[in-house]
Image (cartoon, rainbow, N blue to C red; front, side, top):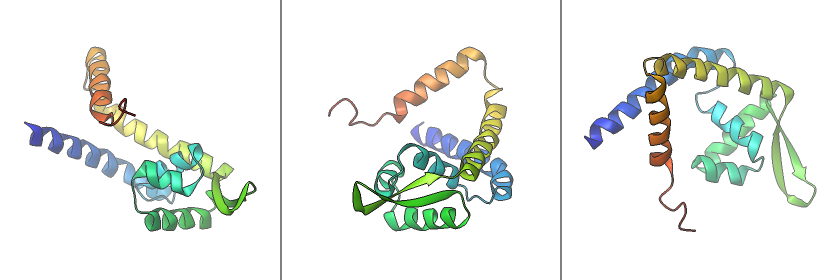
Length: 139
């Protein structure tokens, strides 16, 4: 049963990704870019983004360089600590992030339409339980 659950989660994720890929490509984004932009919107510092996204620092660094070259983020020195820099979304970056979110939301909404309202609420509740870190609450 556990393998079936993992397989279903993987298939759902893959289907949403495949459906949204043309939209993301039109926006000049790779599949993980909306998530990175979203994290930069919240955290700004690369080290925080690496921790949250659980991706290797060199990978995130290359992704940020590409997004910067495309005019979606800007890099600035931290005036409180000139050894650090932070990123910020440009206006174009904010617009692209919002449009990419809408693409992904539409794709997911098409799948959620198969569920009743009660099933949707239960689905969210169960996902929240499963997505919680095992260390949450132990700190």
